[in-house]
Length: 194
Image (tube, rainbow, N blue to C red; front, side):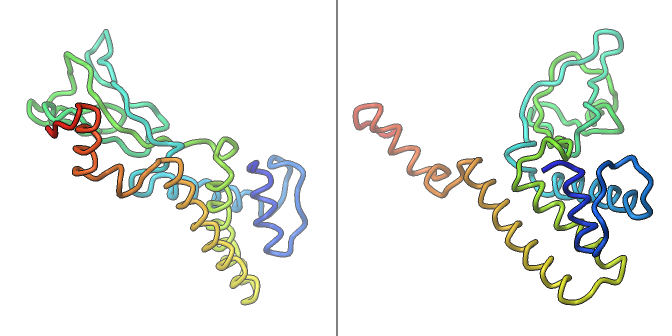
C-alpha cells in the first residue's frame, strides 16, 4: 500500500474526495499524513518490533572518534553483548561502566528500524492506516457507524498482522522448547542426550 492510498483511505472514511498527490494543497491532507506517520512510528516500535524491521548485527566504533553511532532510522536498540553495559544516548552508544562514548570494539545489537510506509508489508500498512483512520475519524467528529466499521476492520487487520508476524518469525512452542532441542540433538548424536 502506498502512502497516497493510505491517505485516501483516511479521507474516504471522512467522506472526503481522494487526492492524486500528497503535495497538492488540501486542507485535510497534512493532518492525515501526520497521523499516518505517527501511527507508523508507534506501531513499528511497539514491543520487540516485527519480522520486517527487527535486525541483529554489529555496530563498529567510528575510526576517528571511537563513538558507536546509531543509524537514524532506529526506533529501539538493545545491546546483546553481555560483557558491555551500554545504552543508546542520542545517536551514539554510552558505555555505562566507564561513562564514556568511546568504544574499542564492535558492539552486537538488536535494533528495531522505522521502515518507510511505502516499503511496509501489506499487513503492516493495512493495520497502521486503520489506526490512523480511527483517530482521523475522531478528529472530524465522524459518525458512529463508520467509526464502528473502522474499529472492526482495525481488529481484523491487527489479527492478520500478528498472525503474519508469528508465521514469518517461525515462532512456536516446539522450537523454543529446551527439551525438544535436547531430543533433536540426541537424534543427531546417535541417541546420546547432552
